[in-house]
Length: 510
Ligand SMILES: Cc1cc2nc3c(=O)[nH]c(=O)nc-3n(C[C@H](O)[C@H](O)[C@H](O)COP(=O)(O)OP(=O)(O)OC[C@H]3O[C@@H](n4cnc5c(N)ncnc54)[C@H](O)[C@@H]3O)c2cc1C
Image (cartoon, rainbow, N blue to C red; front, side, top):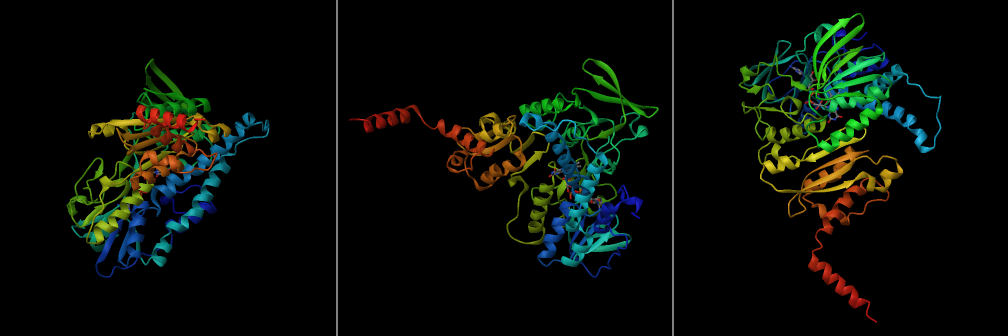
């Protein structure tokens, strides 16, 4: 039987396999011997990467996890959400098959329990990577289960056992923020912490929050057959993103059948029989809607409570642990990595910052700076919305003049043949040059394609150089070469154009 404390439901073979890997029932914490080179608090992506990297280089490492190894990404984040999105994508493909000349009328139905079972199976299948035994046996790391808290500037305690360290990394992540809305707690609600435990499909679901997590899950649930209303206080989704990208997403979600309520605030929740009744303040007045389940996705709160950071002299605020450009906290022995300290709360940033922490904390010599990172991200809706680097307004606020190059997805042959012409690429360059400052890519597989631009930015390759990068035809990534061609066309000055004309006239002479 799975320990109820682990919050893994249902108690089936997949969740039992997951629990056996990420929090084994028979685990015995080791007995520490002397000081550790590195004590890592939290075994999500940031903690696992820091611990494995340091141990791989020969350091003595302790890794402390209070709940599930793998953290949010494996257990209640990226992996289960993308598995469900995979099923939703399949459902959508079947529904859209008619447009491709494929007749599937009358043959489709969605088995929600099977969708969730598939997700649990995939999650369990991935979990050996993050397993306690692997980290203990393959890396020689001392893995402790329990709450970690600081008892001094160089000591952490877990289950009453002191762990002394030369260096430590706080990698305790973040959790769903829950707004103080009257009646919400009494009525009960879902967050990413428990939504993946569902085995029965909610008939009517309200999603509170139009950020990446809210949008991804709203679209997935509607495609799986739930009636979804999404409520967002701002006048658009994904406030960090390009306005046109957010607008494309809004219309895509509406076409899927999501009821979109922008500029709308949830004011109160009341239980009426089996219904949870939401009172909304909309631009056109008060409105109430009854639903079966509420999913709250209004942001993330860093996990700093109970760490007793004051005892270690580590400063923090409501955004998390305070760090400098080298990921160091106000205690020079202690670093932080991942969601607990970053505004960019992604698995790949948790990974990247932990790699930097290994270098900065454990070795002398050159240090890695957070401000030098080129950070991409993607919201896995349909279409996907990917971005890297700066937006024009950010670049301008840093004193850089910006010029942008835009190509529509409808100009890309592969997007046309795939019937997915919605979207665009915008590449933002420093005015008067092809130095890429940032880019937004909207369309199918945008999350994969953005890496080509990220690689160029890291390597210092300008947009114009993409004109000579041969892309296989037909692929959607040709959109990047097209943006380069658009840039290079502007390099053809009137003088150069007239010289070319003269040259060709000369070559045509009899
Ligand atoms: C629904 C959802 C979908 C997402 N999808 C994506 C995606 O597609 N791509 C992407 O890049 N990112 C995605 N993310 C974000 C990603 O999951 C996080 O950025 C990533 O997990 C951060 O890793 P972390 O190690 O910093 O924190 P976490 O994964 O939160 O790990 C922190 C660990 O510390 C433990 N801990 C906390 N306090 C203590 C303590 N006192 N003692 C011991 N242990 C402690 C926690 O139990 C946890 O296991 C998603 C998030 C959610 C919620």
